[in-house]
Image (cartoon, rainbow, N blue to C red; front, side, top):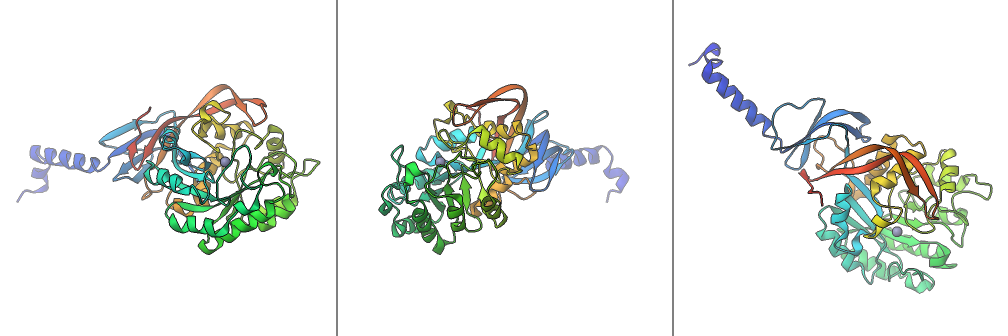
Length: 393
Ligand SMILES: [Zn+2]
């Protein structure tokens, strides 16, 4: 038998060193020294983040020892993998890998397809590298642009939409209805009623797109239940969230109070202007979730990438941790499929986004060719999906 002194002699030191190495090697990846912002636990501090077997295993001021891989995140912001709840990523198999480059580790295709063509979207979602989900458009055709899919209300077929949901329970997480007059004419309320009817037996949310609708918010919003989502929340009049004097409608605050989610949905045309964002946010009406309305062409539009869209709210003075919440934990809460995402808690799947916050002058675009200059812009600087660093394209 060796006593303690003998154990800590020459042979013991080697044993001890190899033991330490074995313990440290339990980590597959350590992300070192970044400013970790995880609104799910109110954390905003410099931390190391250790990952093993695809899960977060430690978030500490200093994680010593070796890991198979290390990422130096000093001077960077480390956040839970971004979740974009309004995209059109399902339209092409090229979409999801592009989104991954932007830091998006979870996405929802919001109504690109209806019952007639949801099968293709579901295939893209199932084969995507990250978590992909879809909303089925209440119009059986899906989005018809620019003509609009709900001019004939018969396109909103409840039985067909329910069949699409039943066929794709693993992918379809809600129903979408686009309610602007150029899409739905005078059919907005009936289309929304049918969307609710389709979703009801499955207990799924409905996402509506607002702005320039035939009906007023006071008629539309009562048809929404807790957990339903209003996207393009800052769409200009007619029939946006402000009255003719620019005041926030009481119906809108009442809807939020009872659990309706208000989503940004950047988009390209007609979906937001700076004046509406400014008036609404000055009255304290910030987004619950921030989303892009992204598609494979978005690099060349005012969207560019998800961090660019988030940066528009830095310009309006929204606290950074609140912005990150809108793109992570709040987005995750909108759909049960993301229940374990949007967080860097120990035990969570290791989906992590690394961002760079650059200072300078950056020009941002609304949907009416309006530009505004901000002094800070978030850039994608790395993505970790299920514990593995994503190769930069
Ligand atoms: Zn959209």
